[in-house]
Length: 345
Image (cartoon, rainbow, N blue to C red):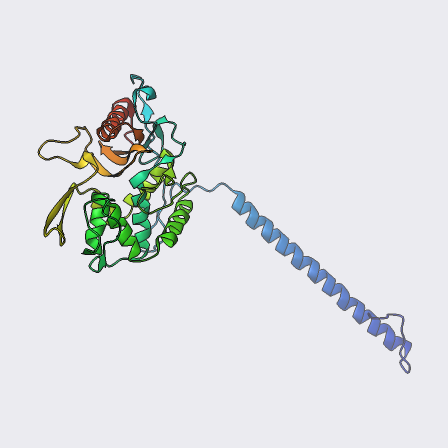
């Protein structure tokens, strides 16, 4: 710090006086400059801030292709279906199924429900998750593997036979073969590790009501809710390798044990039409679905259908018979299309 009162030895009073005056002037100029600079910065900031706060009109904004830039995007409003004023009520008690759910495929709007959040054994609907996890291994469908599992599980393939992975993939998803599922999993992993990944994947998808204990669905511990099963179906249908196969009505596999072709029909009777529809329905498109049955579960079915370009998801859990799960899915789906209205724009 400068001492204005200090007089160095040998200097005259006049010399010290002028030195102090010059020093003081320099300090005053520095302080004045700092003040003016901060004032100018503050005024510039205020002016900039005021510019930001002025409401901007972007309605006349036009982006030229020559200069590039992002286009102005206005999201389309959700087309949420609403119950028609002339709708007829539908009593959940008229169905044999214990649990049911119908959702709009685009918005997720619930259109009909019967205890959709109660967990229930899902049986072979499990195979949709098995398929999702198998695809994580990026299988080469042309490679081969050996069939495993006791023949009591099903008669579509036999233990010891050698098939391409693609053959077993079709057999698992079309005919719901348990041995095909087990053999595919065994080609890549142990069942214990595979099931652990199935449960991880369920959590990743937000399926909080779902637990898997095996890869086929024959165990009673494979449980889910109707609500969760729609999440699973949507994820499965998102993948072409699954979507294309589960919409096939039939498949033929040559058995090296029986020395003849083995013809398999899809377990989804909505797809079957030979020569007459096995289950009459009024839907335009069957986007995809999966069945499941064990004694404690009854007859389960999850499917996505479409009519007039409006997809809906239907779940039937615990129906009393194989045919009933399809007729009840059909009836509730057709009621939805007859009684709900979708906005046109």
